[in-house]
Image 1 (cartoon, rainbow, N blue to C red):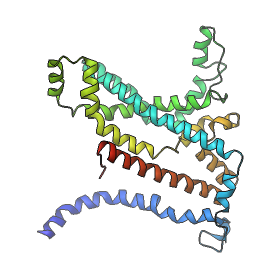
Image 2 (image 1 turned 60 degrees about the horizontal axis):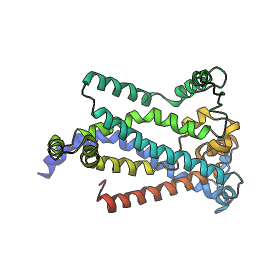
Image 3 (image 1 turned 120 degrees about the vertical axis):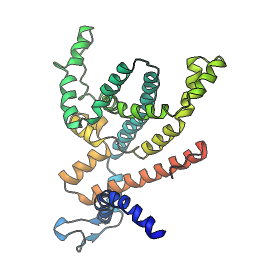
Image 4 (image 1 turned 90 degrees about the horizontal axis):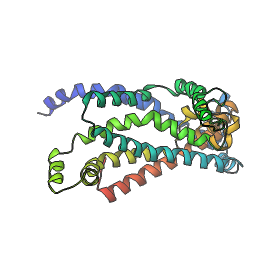
Length: 300
């Protein structure tokens, strides 16, 4: 029986083999490079060459940089707002779309809001640079028609972080909406009928039937998103920021790129990456524990 079971499951194991190899090569083998964070790394000597071991000096150097506190705040603020709005906006849109009874309109809206998810920030970055241009951008032309002075969205430290947050939410909320719409299909329609018989309004039905029915999916996505609390979106910000907005837009990932690849301080860059990974591990563990205690939810 065990041999038959093994033969039956063998194709399934073969199917996951490419994904396992991908994770092994790109996620687990590079973990060995963590030792660079504790070395004065010289590429010519190789990863396992006779490098100078300097302990925690790379971490001390980063922590003592005048701009590090500001970089941490930028990363936390942008990432936190993306997580919060990335949860709230799709939930609201999914609930509203679920009330639409015209199926052609509903599917059309779903498709329209989902399409930006497939566009890279290289493409969208160029589009937003043109749209938000202070000289002849579409947005500023609309503002000028109402007598409002042009705003330099991508060059003003007051506007840049919120611009990054809103454009990211616009790009990704369609993906989250599809997930929540799928969760809504699992809610028993009899619960709505019972609520109507009890005299519950649509708002009461949403509070006491719809949201509890989506609770498990909301908790799951919240747990997964909290792991990205220090991942403010390198590809987006890299394609849209400039030295003018380093004060409000420089995040850990762009800092690592500049100090590691441009300045060739590989040990320092690895130290920052390790610091970020440890914080992410703590956040994921904490969010999982909270989800288990509050909602009795388990991923595994």
